[in-house]
Amino acid sequence: MSALAMRTKGAVTLVRSQLSFDNAKTVLFFYILLTQVLKAQRHLKARGIVATTKELYNWISRHVVHLLLRVPSTKARVDTQMNQAKLDIENKLVPKGADVVRHLTLPEEGKSLEWILAEMDKMDVELGNGTNWKQGKLSGAVYHGGDELQKVIVAAYERYCVSNPLHPDVFPAVRKMEAEIVSMCLRLFNNPDGAGVMTSGGTESIIMAVKTYRDWAREVKGIREPEMIVPSTAHAAFDKGAAYLKIKVHTIPVDPYTRRVDLKHVKRAINPNTIMLVGSSINFPDGNQDDIPALGALAAAHKIGLHVDCCLGSFIVPYLEKAGLSQGENCKFKLTPFDFRVRGVTSISCDTHKYGFAPKGTSVIMYRDAELRRHQYYINPTWTGGVYASPSLSGSRPGALIAGTWAVMQYMGSEGYLASCKEIVLSARTIAKAITTSIPELYILGDPPASVVAFASKHPKVNILEVGDAMATRGWHLNALSEPAAVHLACTRLTLQVVDTFIADLKDSVKEAKVAPSGKGTMVSLYGLGNSSPVGPSMVGQLATAFLDALYKA
Image (tube, rainbow, N blue to C red; front, top):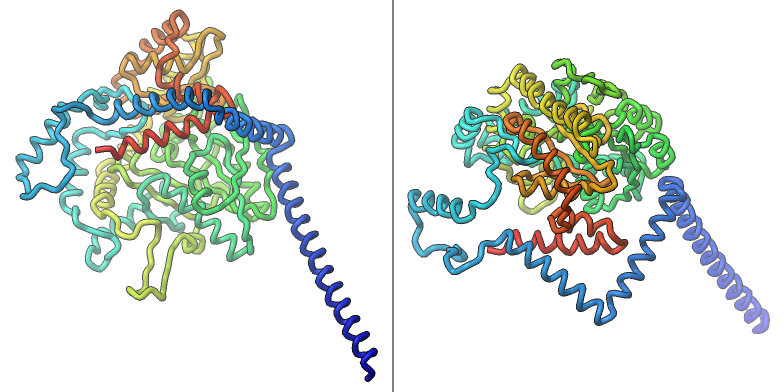
């Protein structure tokens, strides 16, 4: 072959290579473009034009405000205000003064039990300006079953205080009790042949469910960019789990009247990357229940998971029907089915440490079958320390809490929980009825069927956050809500003794907020800031960070 022919052939090869490279780049470009367009289309379909436009507006507004905050004079003024707010938070939480004794290093010699108890007494006296929870003036927080039940917990805890379920061969009784707790809960939620695991609380149960569906979807459906659909009233633990596990969340609005998730919007948000739907029975913010059968039908039709959050409903919701309370006085809707009898429900979380009255730090995550549960496990067969397997986030776990939970459930029995359900739910309905009939400035959010009552203002001169702050001056510790601004009370056994006091104090607080609003309370300052401007949430985030920092200041 001549030199000219060889050069010509080389040039042709080079051109072909260049064309191939250019074609590959073009294909890659259009692949990326198509992928991003598809993601945008799914996002727009899930959120809707109005919500997407609002998100874009807020994003632009936040960036504009942040740019304005870089102006030295504005930044200095805002920093001064934020620093003062952070100092106020610290001063409320951290004891100050020369008389405060701080134990910052280990003592050279160990102290006696008598000294330890005396020091605890001293701290209780010195720091005794907190809430006396036994008075019952708080929302949820302490689910106290009574002094006798407390003795049962302490006795069980003492017996198994060093036990660790990570070693079932060393502590076989704890293993047996944990399995029996899960079995009792599965039967309570009508799935005796299902599977479950105990966790440290509702947040871990929810995160474990999210992890399970992520891993299940990856293995069974090949989903690598998972998405989940949750109501706006779902617990923040779902967002927390998604943040940890890198899952996209579509938050769906609820009907302003029923407070149930918008099912048409849920259906529109489902796409090939959806791994799970979420429903609450009952939700934390306002105590209402989503339409679980309708969500179950959607989940079954699309072959995806449906997790029902019963952490707060726990040992109340399963007993409502037996107690004759599934259709309350003047209820707008019946308590809809919510457990494993509903087709499409694949997992349920239930907090034993709430209305189960078990010691704090216990919950159960339940699955329709053991095959789904195995996706929750973490197993490392090649670790140099040996085969490592754990059912949940924790490795070592406190067996004493398991023993305490088992003991409480045996002590209470089904009849005990039924009686407790009646008392607590009737107290909540008494409060709701009083608000509806005798406090015209307020209204109840939805029609809560169980233990939580949330109320908002319908009077132009009554700021509900002012009402919450006025209740705080009367010793009440309630929860503030947003969208809409509201306040809620989660009734417990402790509430039974103060129902009339609550109603009277609420009436007085509404009058006070109407006539002489202070504008200085915690709810007004914190939650008002959160809704006052696009940058409000970031400011609240800074204050929340300051609060967490203050928790660890000795």
